Image (cartoon, rainbow, N blue to C red):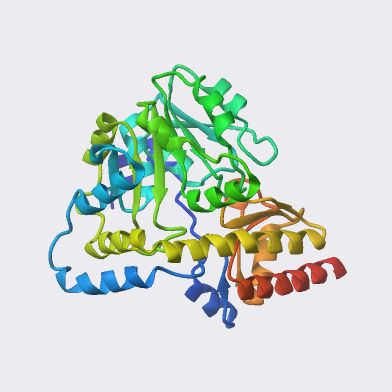
Length: 375
């Protein structure tokens, strides 16, 4: 039998795979109780009924390959964001686009820079491309932009900036980001990963601050690529549609690296329909804004530190083994995310659910943590 490890490059052999959150079916099979999934930052309201209808309407066409460039969706997104169509690339989820970006810009000897405790896909895509990821310590559970700027060196090609950050839920507002971009060399591309932008924009309105000028940077021709997704507020995580907006020449290189026909016929139809159902998205965003404080208050009242969020989840520091707490919560019918893979073994992330789901979580969390205190 061949030793296949000899055929695989060293940086791939050492690559750690993505560890997904536990699926609802798997958790229910293990625990033998009905569960609520609050682990993966999915909207509790599902996709727009219009998106479901749009997918159903094209199922009979699934013998045909999809439009490789998602031309209609690309045009709609360009109009919505006031950019040219050739500045938009649509991919099978924004995580797929992160992999494309890393392969396009990195190679052995080159690096990307980001923060510790940020999106777990950044180190995976960087190492898969043969590059090195430099991580900068956090400041108040968020990005230390001065530290990130100082970490950039002659071999840096990418800065990954999750805004809001996953898993801490913190944000970099517009003015600090302006100052940071002024320090970034022109040969470094800043990836503004705004997967949770719908939620952040609503929080910014409520809090009286400016969230982001990201699309303005693109229109100015800056060395910035903005990532968005239909997986969060639009409720289409299961069909995989994401997109990037940036300089036309750079986006053309990214487009060449896409897997051919990767955005399916139903996915393109669903995304187009979701864009037209603003009421459905607003419902998810408004519920999130209202219920976030309920979760934070409930967790804090039990004596645990919950970080104020700009996204659709709450980061909580427990001060003890989070994986063990997650296991006990699963036995109570609640699936949450223990953050050991992020380098935070005593922290959890809880997706903000409906009022009913949040009530069930808080009751279960209180019960589980009181049991721990008794022991």
